[in-house]
Length: 456
Image 1 (cartoon, rainbow, N blue to C red):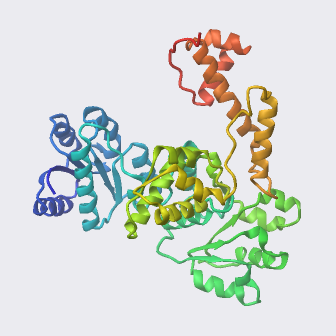
Image 2: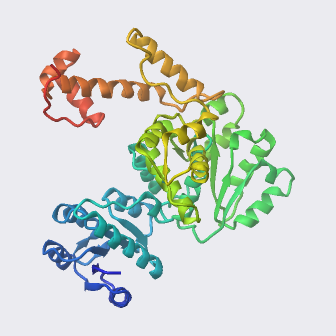
Image 3: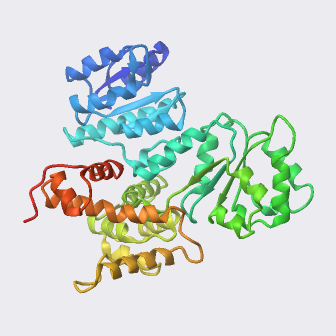
C-alpha cells in the first residue's frame, strides 16, 4: 500500500495496532485520540484515507463526515465502531462513509478495505468516492438507498432489541427471511440460536417441545404462517403462551396480507394478534426501482468474489433492468445476474444479452403512454390493471390509494413548478389549490423546489 492514513480512535491499543500494521504495509500514519486534531489534519490537506471511531472524547465521528465531504471531497472515510447496531451502520451509510466495520474488527479485512480505498482515491483524483454496494460489510446485509428501504432500516433498528413478536410481510423474493435474520443478528439475542420452522416441524404432538429445546431462548422464525393449518396454528398459540423465563422471540413471514387472511378465516385471530406486536412490510422492487442498479452491482461483485469473471452492465442494460417489472423481486434479479455472468460474451454486458435472459421471463412493464391519442385515464387504468395483474391471485400491499395518489401528485406538482419557474403562487393558481396547501404537499412529498426557466 502507498499513501497516508489518518487514524482517530480513543483506544490507545487500537491506534498502536493500526499504526504498526499500516506502517508495515508501506503507509504513512498519523494517529490521534481527538476529532479536533483529525479535522485540523483534514483541513491542512493531510491524508489519503481516514479511519475513525464514532464515539470520541470530543465528539461523534459520524457527525464529522459532512464537514469532511465539504473540506475534502473524495476523501474516503472508514468508520469503525463498538456500537454494533444496524442503526450505526445505517447512519454511516446515510452520511456516505466509504465503509463501516463494527468492533471488534478483523485486522486483515480492515487492511484490505483500506488498500481498496487508497486505490480508488488514486484513480479517481478529486472526484467523490462512495463505497461500492458489494463492499457493504456483512453486518449491513440489506442493499438499498431508496426512502422506503431507509424507512425499513429505521423500523428494524427500533424493534431490534424489544421482545415484541414481529410479523414480516412481502412478496416472494423480497428478502423477508433476510430481514428476520438481520433483526436477530443485531439484537441482544445474537449469541443464541436462530431457528426457522414450517408447519411440518409441528405436525406431531412433541413438535413444539422439540422446537423450543432447539431455539433455547433465541429467535424462532415461522415461515409463511398463512399456509399453516388451523390445528398447528393453535399449537403455535400455546407455544407463545407457554410459561418460562427462556422463551424465544417469535417472528413470522407471510406473502399474504394477514389481516385479510384473518378475516377470510385462513389465520386464527388469537395467533394474528399475538404475532402482530410489530409489523414490517418489505417493499417489492417495483416500489424501489432506484435500488435496482445498486442490487445489480452488488450481485455482479458477489459473483466476482466467488471466482467468476468481472462483469458490468452497459448503460443500455442498466436502463433495461430499471424498466423491467421484476415480479420475482430480488431473488429473480440475482438469478438473472448470475446467468448473465456465465453467458456474457464480453466483460460489459450488452443490452441484447439482457433482452435474451429476460425474454423467457415475465414481460417488461410497458412504457407510460400508448400513443399520442391515448387518453390519460386509459393510460392510468392500463398501468393500474398491470399492477394488480403482477400480484397474481393476491391483492397488492395495503395503502394502495395513498401510493397511487403520490405517484400522480409528485410529477404533477414538479412539472407545474417547472412550468411556472418555481413561483409557488403561480403554481398554486395553475393547479387551482391554496398556496398553503401547495407548500404542505411540497413538504410532505419531499419535492425539491428550485427556480427554473419556464417551459415556453
